[in-house]
Amino acid sequence: MKYFYLLTFLLAAHLCFAQKTFIFPKVKPQGISIEQLTPTNWTVIEKANGDLNHDGVEDIAVVFEFDKKIDETRTYGDNNSEIIKETQKPRILAIFFKDHSTGNFRLSSQNNDFILRSEEGGKLGDPLNQIGIKDQQLYLRFQGGAEWRWELGYTFKFENKDWFLTSAINLYFNQNTGDMTERVYDFKTRELFTTVGNLHRRDIANRKTSEVLYFSQLRTFKTFKKPWAWEIMPNVYL
Image (cartoon, rainbow, N blue to C red):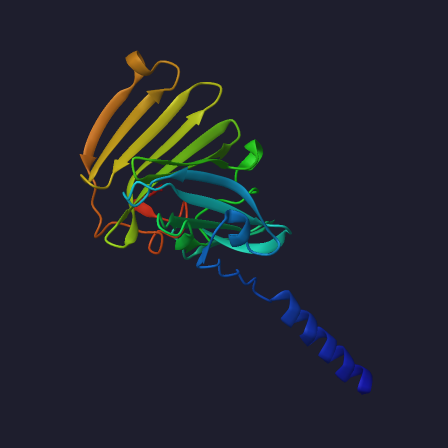
């Protein structure tokens, strides 16, 4: 009987360990350098400098990556029903404003979900293509796929004390034939511009249309969890 209880205890302990949820660190609220702000066991893999809050001082956006791979559950599709587990290194997007008087960086936003991980790009590998800052806006670019490839771009702007998605682009194309669909979203004017045709013959083979975008309110990092998780229209995910 004692062996039965021992086996039961070990099984319960194993299940508890297996189901342990990874806990993201809280990025320091302020610091004098990115090295000082980088969490322990995390590494800076991308960064961009530029003025994000229109004060004439260069701010910074950083992507941190955890030093070890873990089993991470990620949402796709409608952000609820389609769940995929990946073994990969978690990533954090952190945005800092620089105080012109002290020189300190102050944390504006930490997001643990939006940046795609290294295993989410398909055969092309790491999908994180670029982060950039221009015209007081933060640009995030991703790409992936195989023969059929995709490119995603998102632009966020700090307004009314929050980060709002102002525009986006989604390009889906065949590397061999050039067949493509490109959607450009302008959330400020509520317009969607769609181009269907061929990537190699844009001027003569493509059909361009525009339509009104319907959504209740502008998305933020809090309400737009990650790429591929917003069904912006039936069977179209952004």
